[in-house]
Amino acid sequence: MRKMKTKMYIAYGSNMDLEQMQRRCPEAELLGMGRLENWRLMFKGSKTGAYATIEREKGQSVPILLWRITETDEERLDRYEGFPNFYYKRTIQVVKTDADGKPCGTTRGMAYIMHEKRKLGVPSMEYFDILYRAYCRFGFDRKILEEAYGYTWEWGRKTKS
Image (cartoon, rainbow, N blue to C red):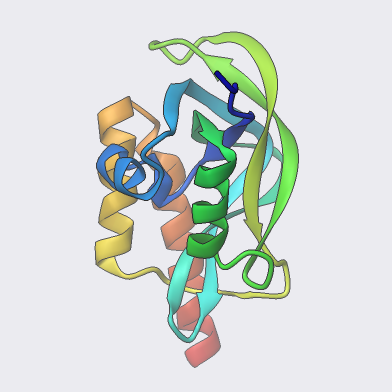
């Protein structure tokens, strides 16, 4: 029996929705929770909409889910995420956390990051709601998500005036 090659995948956006991830990547296995230290959650996009991304920012953190994915799962995610034109991939360090959010080690995983040249944008309520439900389901600090939304909403308001 041939063993499948797998890798760690870091989800901070809509791929934190378990049902959506099951449809998208049926071989993926949820390994646990964690956070990205010194990264900020943001919403950026294009004419089709604004989506979650992360950018380096000292003192900020972003809650994540850590998945084990197969090469086939990664190919599916590449198509979904618009790799390499919309998002690129980067291996980054994760602080793993227990159910109470306490640190319990570190690991490295692959994350999709939107190209920095993309402009900030306000996500649709449907998209935001997917993330909000995941934050509630896993006990993540909703303030992080709400601040990301508020930041991009305020930016949008300023650019229109």
